[in-house]
Amino acid sequence: MPRKGRVGSTPTSPTTAEGPGAAAPLYFAAMNNTISPAPRSSVKVRFELPAEQLTTALDEAVRHLARRTRIPGFRPGKAPRAVVERVVGAPAILDEALDHLVQRAYRDALIEHDLTPLTNADIDIEQAEEGKDVIFSATVQVRPEVELGDYTNFKFAPEIETIVLESGNGLGPFGAKGLGEPAMTPSIAAVANAVSNAVGARVTELPITAERVLAALRSTT
Image (cartoon, rainbow, N blue to C red; front, side):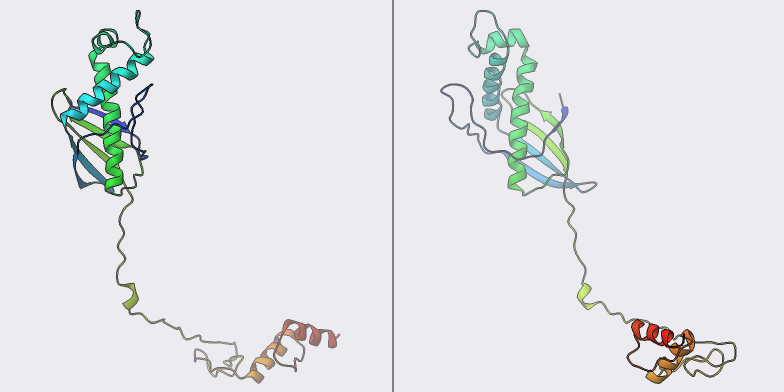
C-alpha cells in the first residue's frame, strides 16, 4: 500500500550499526535512482532499492525497538524479532526500517546528483514488502537554474533631451534668444554673470564656489 511522508534535507555521513560489538559500517547493495524535473523548481527522484536492503533495515529496526521498549524477561536490546513483533507489532518494525532506509537512500542521492534542497522532501512509497524491492519517490524544491542571455552585445544608446531655457522677456539667462529656442552652451563669463545676478552680488573669481559667493555677498553689506 503506497505511503506518503516527509524527510529532512541534510546529507549525513554513512550509517553504522549501533550497540556493543556492532560498530562496523552497514554496507548495502547498489541502489537505482532516476531524477526528473517537477513543477515549481522541484525535482523528483525515484528509487528502487534491492530487497536485501529492506531485510538488513528490518533487522536494524528490531534492535532499535528492542532497546527502546521494555519487554518482560529480556534485557534491553536482547529480545528476538518474533517477541518484538508481538509487543510492538509488525507495522511498527516496518515503519522504523523504512524511515532509516529512505533517509539514507535520499541523502545519498542528494550527494550523488549534487542537489541543494530548499525544503524537506515529499516521500511517496510505492512498494515496501519484505522479500521485494523497495520503490519510492522523493520530490523536493531545489535552487532554480538561471541562464543569462547575451548581455555583452546588447545594442543601446542614451537618449539626451534638449533643455530649453525660457524667460519672460524672451531672453534666456545664458543668451538663448526667443521663447522655446534651445539654449547654447554658456561661456564661463556667462555663468559668472548669471550667478552674480542670482545672488545680487558680483562674483569675479573663478571657479565659482560657495565660499566665493558668500564672500561676494558679505562685500555688499
